[in-house]
Amino acid sequence: MGITAFCAWLEGRDYSSAIRTSDWLFPTIETLHVLTLTLVVGSIAMVDLRLIDVASRERPVRQLTADVLPWTWISFVLAAISGFLMFSSSATKYVGDGPFRAKLALLVLAGVNMAVFHGLTYRRVQEWDRAVPPMAAKLAGGASLLLWIGIVFCGRWVGFTT
Image 1 (tube, one colour):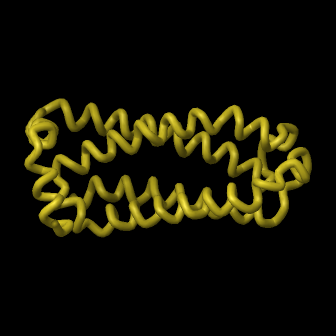
Image 2: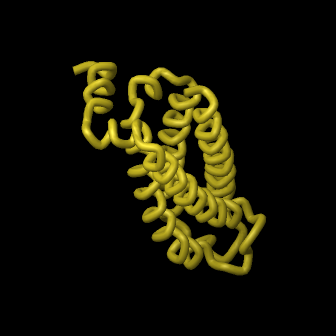
Image 3: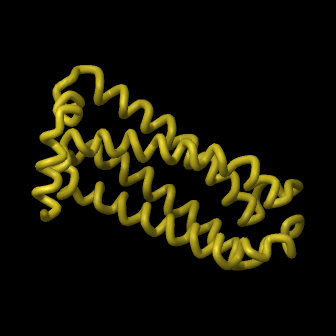
């Protein structure tokens, strides 16, 4: 099954039709998506600003990530679910939309950036936990901030192009 056929199948699900035709369901899901995305971006920004040595300098990186990342992951899962539900309501329209595709590409890049950071740089966090982060951490934090700004920008743009 190709992507177009899959999107058409997804749009044909009862819950997709309900979201598409309801006066209140899509806006409610969209509101949940925006609120949870705000928590995702805000919590990631807290860590990123510490990594680039702009904020929370007095807090050890490990303590900050331990405090913030559970909120990030819970919010991300809820944002992904609500985003999927909105996508399912008009999947064939969204899949061809440039800003939507750009948002997904930036999400993938943000995930790669996070995986590389946690797989390489964060493994040695005990060496710089209470100090100025190394250049690799600063680059990862800066890239993350830029990627998430792009994700939010493209996500907002989708609302005007679909």
